[in-house]
Image (spheres, protein in one colour):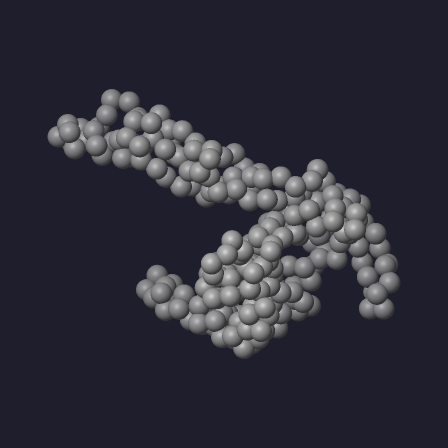
Length: 240
Ligand SMILES: [Zn+2]
């Protein structure tokens, strides 16, 4: 099946939104209804992988572009009346992936980027929780124009190269001429940025046979990262 993404993006988006709505209504209504007066800031809702596979649109979109599909699902989830009016946020956590999503860390290649896979690993803490700027807010000191730039974890921070608003203002005043120097007096608005709590973890690949016995213990040579409600969980588990 070919997708006419460029022609009818809204149609596919609508189908995905509808599919998520149905999935939550048919399978999670009671659970979501119980969330009134939720204490936690972020709450993970566990959604079975098999339920996603039942809907043709959801199955296809979730496996080709999981981030986009999950973002839409999270939007639907947070429209639910039970969590409106408080500070909590629900996030989808897909659980019990089918066997073909099960990998070993040694098998990971660049082509697996942005795909959903599961691993059997032992995790241990590495440095504890920390915050990072997920979306940076910049403001031009000259004209006051504000821009938002989504950042990538463990990458140099993306910042605007110059202020296009200043260039437009200059051009409007100077018969379309460009300013002699690129206007780049832009500052990061630290207080207004969107931060996310994350935690890096050490991962050790293990193998388990069908009876649940540990058959192989790998080296601690991989690092993973968790966010939201998983941050700090490891310390809570070991201390409590
Ligand atoms: Zn400006």
